[in-house]
Length: 431
Image (tube, rainbow, N blue to C red; front, side, top):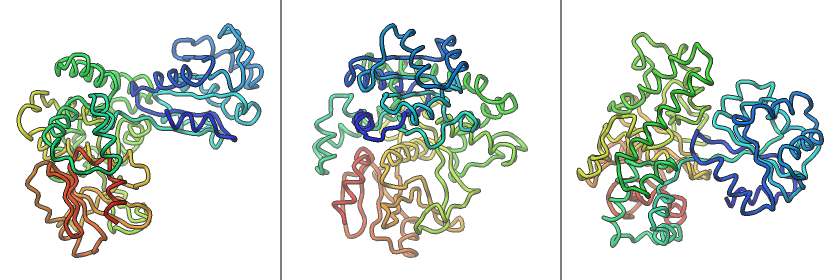
């Protein structure tokens, strides 16, 4: 919301595109933004109001479009006072193209848009207003936000303000983290948990969500990719259950080859459903220059969705630390990647291997230094790979995230999994 307000107040504001996977809360957020900060909201859903597509077929002139929108809205659209929302904009490609002309000819109007499949619209460069729009990305709730939703906002803010001594709350936070691993951060799943505290009800929500993603494959992808998308999507839990979680095309389907399935991965990325963690051969800046393009891991966008897709029962939350260890720690690595991706000052979607002898789960950078981070799923921490890395590269600081309380000793920092959202602050305090 703060970033939307900052966009609203920019002197050279361009139309905004809010990106995010289906049902992550884009529509709710934009309508709430309009209700809170504007006198009026003109909301257009192109999926539900297909007849409005004719407005854009006739003309891309903003003045003519605004005249038609005012008729649809039933009242004048006033610059700076009315928020215009184009929802599911990918359904009308010319509406997407019109954003270019709003940027050039009618910048005084506040226009934002959203769509669940906007990423794949990039495949149609003719309709995309490159360079004439701004972007914001909406992701599932982080663990910090999940804490706030569960009435632990003061505790979360305390951590963000630099208080890392949470021993009195350690067991409570571990319990809440276990719940987060099961529920995840998709808004409907979280709301169902808050309303019912019923894991079976949460699973029903996640099942419907997963089914809607599969339905989208058939609706939006080229026919030749539909079956491949399902195969890749269903293979991800088994790929992550391996000791070496590197994505293997041959495990998707017998005889599968990279050249046949690479486009499928690109579509899933563009739909916002998967995230790649890329292997680097050397931890040096810029990290992207040292990527091994053939080696990567594939994770989902949400730990709750992965847990459900894996077929892991919600009752695992009752069984000690099993939820963190299941599938060889795959849920823990999924969680860590999600948390790191939210820290935009850190380039965190990389891992490192050394000729198969050692592997560090995550490599990130603050722009000046490169840091290794091992993701552990228990209290007992063995970090042989981190020692190999340390001896080779002598980093300024090593990080391990696990179920252990926060501890700093020499150049090694232990961060409890539930505190990972404070990593930027921890970096400042350990300089």
